[in-house]
Length: 73
Image 1 (spheres, one colour):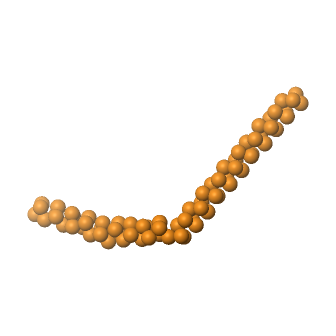
Image 2 (cartoon, rainbow, N blue to C red):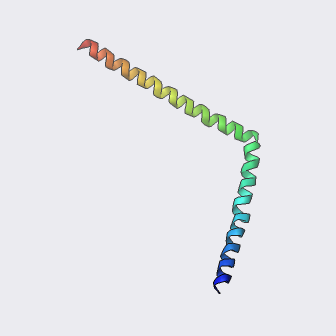
Image 3 (cartoon, rainbow, N blue to C red):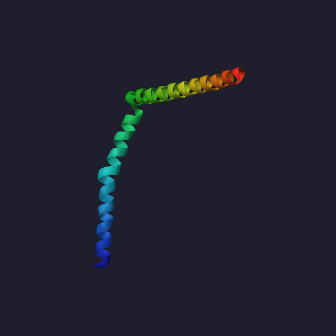
């Protein structure tokens, strides 16, 4: 009976892989090659770049304000 459960568990795992992982990989592959993916990717990258620029500007401002305070002391 031990071998039967091992086989049935393996069958279940194989079915899960076939039914869930493989179709998702196919869908992701199609999406990855599509123009929509490029667009989404560009949007995300540009948002990240803008955030980083904003952070850099804020840091420059903060360091400038600190310098100004030091000059006034």
